[in-house]
Length: 231
Image (tube, rainbow, N blue to C red):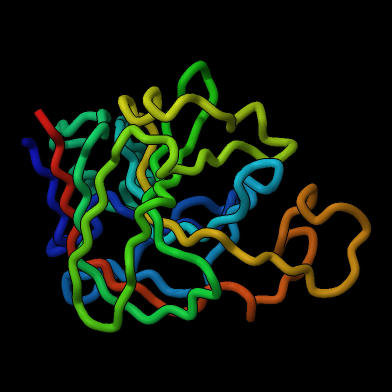
């Protein structure tokens, strides 16, 4: 096996957070060799129904270069791309060492992989293997099995079908050529006050306010990410 390890001892290593569609990536807080992600998190509405729903994006890493200068300023050198680890995640074992405190409100921490094929980005969420977040340090492993029963395809909201869509899991897993993420899902998006129209055709916190008390709150400290790729 080839093994990628990120310990955040020397910066974010290419990992980053996300502010919004308009503002893009944001730097992660690195404290005592841990990547820290804190609420409030942006609501990713790109996959609103009829897609799979809404997400909080805690940690992201591009899996293929070249990486632009602005992104390097935000996330530092991408040690995954520099290490030439490739994009075939089929049967890859991913182990996280982490801790945190979450008022999850029904959401779980899940692995997400995305790949562009035929000019459309397809994302698959490993909902069958959630990662526990506990107040004390712990290690948890997930395996990227090519079994669609363990995954949820994100699809697209009504007006993003030119960018997002659905490709078979085996197609995406064998070439995760865009990014990998750890996200909170599902989210309970509740409009604060009356709306004119379908909330899923609008954009939460951009077109209307939401009840933040129904969304996850807290923080996560990520100490190590280890990805073991089969030969």
